[in-house]
Every structure is written in structure tokens, then in C-alpha cells.
Length: 397
Image (cartoon, rainbow, N blue to C red):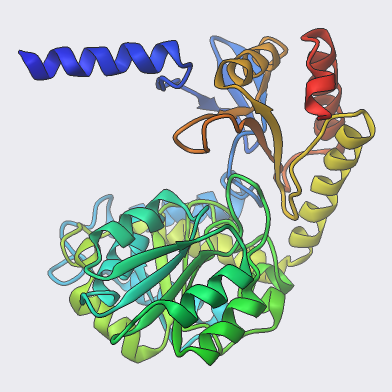
């Protein structure tokens, strides 16, 4: 068949360009180590920022929920799947995010596509979206009926100009990541809110990589900038710092009631399992009672950044535990990652289409579960690999 031939051609092209993706099986030994063929590897490619996936209280909560409620939910939230842990977790998230209420989705991706497409639902609306927003935001904009206008990454002068000069007879939406997952920088939320208030904009912030990571107590980008009460909707995920799965939207009762009735990814999805929600609640409780984990994580991230920078490894300007080393070519990024893998260090090679052509990179993610010895070991391996591959100079360009 012609279509199958086209598919094969595309796969071969991706292989030639070093952007073909394949699945690899990992057995998690703990929060920062995996076992592969009976060999133990140090993992620095996880979004498990607070290292809570193996915390005793989190695991115990999941086991207890299975014993009380069973495994699956058995239905969508609007039919039979709305078990008691949902309401409790939504209350917890709303208090944590300092909003009126919250709504759980099945993933961060689902929360973005469902929320954006439900709210920006007329051709009169206009979405203003940062050029480096996550793929789930991009897909949410594609599903929305509104016009989408892309502004250059964190360029507030360009955003101001677009808000001023783009005709809009409906609602203006400004959508941004709180922390950008590939570069590790933080959105200019103060200026975004100023512009939103000037031009009657509705601000949506995706805090997937900010929750548990920045702001007092890990409460995210709004708290980081002191903007509580001035953000219309905060989105996030339970799958990173909160050690489970699922996504959420936190905001006013009015908006959440609307999403409950209009967000298709919420309405038509089977509810999450009780164990998942119990684990997320327990992880959030650990964060609330041990907020020092957020500051400790920042110090560990600063340590590896300092060591790599002093050795001559050029890092992208990250303000978070995301540590990107820009390489350039996709093939060279893969070679570098394989070199680290041979030394039992797992780091992500990020390639197009996740990042633009020519900006492939290694992305390390530091977690609070990493020991100082882990950080120093990883630094030494990376520095040695860069030197032996003869790319240290190119990293300094």
C-alpha cells in the first residue's frame, strides 16, 4: 500500500536524521537509580523533582487506597468514577495553589488540551501563546476555535505590541508555561499579568515544571512572583514533583464549573485509579510538611551547574533544576548521551521536533533524592565525556 510505503520512508528519514525514537525498558530501583540487564544506572532524566515516588508514606497511601477502593475507577467522573479521594485532592490542590477550587484531569496533557479548547471556543477569541510553550499547549490551541498568535519566547515588548495591534472582538487569552521544560527558565509572569490587566487578558499558566519546584513551599510561578489572585487559571500535573499521574486546573469556582461541563478531555475520560490520587495526596502532604525540600533541590541544582560551568561546559541559562547542555546536531547529542550511558549515567538527548533543528541538547534534571555524591559523580562523567569526544570547545561557543 502507498501509505505504508510513505510511513516506512518517514521512519528511515528520522533514523538518518538521528531523531527516531524508540522505547527503552527501565526497572526503577529507587528514585534516582534504574536497573537494566542487572546493571545499576544513575538516572538524571526524570521529572521526579522531589524524589517522592519511593517515599514510604506515598507508597503506603497507594497500597491503602487499593485495599479500600480497589484498582480501577470503573467509569468517568460524571458517571460512576467520582470516588471520595477526588474531592479531597481537589480541596488540597486549591488550598496549595490558593484558589477557590480545582479540577483533576487524567494527565497534564489532558488538562491543557481540555481547558484551552473549552475556554477559547469562539472565532472572536484570540490566544497569545509563547513560542516555547509545551506541545500540550500547542495542541490545545490547535483544538480551540480561537485564532492563535505566537509571540517570541519571553519577549514582552513583542507581546505588548501584539496585544495592542491584534483585532479581538472576543476574549484575549495569554498562555504560558511557568517553567519552560527544555530551557529551564521561568516565564516573565509579572509583565504578562501587567499586560493582561491592561488589555483585559485571561491568563493561563501551566505550572507542570514549577509546582513543587519554585515559589515559597513549591507553590509555583504565581507565588514566586507574588501574584496570587491575579492569575485566572493555573494548570499543572501530578506526575512530576507530586510523584503520581494526572493533571489539574486550579481557579475560580465559576471557571472550574464551566470546565466540568465543557472540557472534553475531562468529560470523556475514565477516572484515575484510587491509588494514583492517594499517592498524589500523600506526596503533597510531604511537601507541605517538609517545604525545605524545595530549597534543598535548588541548592543541588546550583551545585551541578557550578561544577559544569567552571569546567567549561556551556549551559543554557536555567533558573531551575532543569540543566540543559546545548550541543547543536541531533546525532552529536545522541553520541554524547550514549557515551554517558556507557558510564552508567542516563541523561536525555533532546532532539527535534521537541526543540528546533540545530538546538539539540542534553537535558539533566536534578531531584531532591540525588545525593551530593551523585551530583559530583555525574559532573565528572559529563566533563570527561565532553573532553574525550573533543567537543568541549564547541560547547563553549
